[in-house]
Length: 450
Image (cartoon, rainbow, N blue to C red):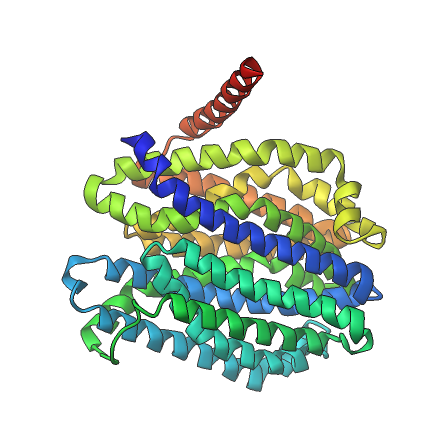
């Protein structure tokens, strides 16, 4: 039964989710290389662009999480089988409301926030970003709707076009209108690419879209109470994830932000398997919890984390041994100052899969409140320890603070998972070794055939 599950649902779902994640990373890396080596003359411009992307990513990721989990959960509940219009209507209202709040923040506090980060030019970019946020409303709604119906291939098409057009725009401007490829033009290219990606998702999700708006106060109240902690969790986790860049900009400079962003890019590539599995694991854990209880959920979590670690461990060692090579490929020799940051943080990358699967698991088993408080603790640790590190240890202090905070977060996660689903850390490493054993077995069979 387990083999059948992993050969059908898991293979297809994880394949397209991984393909989506890898395409996002691939387009992002190629675009980053072009911008770092051919467009931005100094690390300062890259630092400003990195801060802008961080802000947009925080907004989009928070909104995705706030919409995804409540919408998927309520669409899968038996009592809403014939009332799906109500669920979608409430989700769309939440989507619009959150977007309006972000736009109001940009209009009334954006300039002050840019000055706090010591990057005045960021404010104009954020003003253009309002159009981006408006287009995210339909894009995110269609994306979550497709995810609720396990249509991961269709999501891949939308993201592929969105990222591909943005990269193509950079290349075209670099060839024909290089002098016009400014930070503002990059924002405009993102807006155009998002528009066409939204059209693709709208076409793919058209058969699932609700027929007529149907607002229901009871449904809204239930989804709000379920989603309030998920929303808080997404705020805490995403703000914590970019703590090094925000605090570094405030205390030091945008140039140092660029160095931390190089390392962040490498970490993002390392996070692809974790994020892809978390995307698939949440709806599957909701189903497993309803049918089999925590035992099946625990099995999925242990096996998936173990498998991901088996992938990350050798990659982390290679990056640690050859940090200059990876930074030179990604950004060029003028970013070699990021080498010690990378060396400090890369060996602790094995802890990152735990945080992704922890969040998906807590929400799936109906404990979003626990997820919120744990992530809030992580955010406080991140900002507090990074601030102290930068104050007393210099510009590398944020890296030391991040490692200490991640270690504390890891220990808390393991304890909570053990208490809620009977999580066993030893089983994770057993599955890690099993992955290597299976790989060696397949390799030996291949050698024997040749």
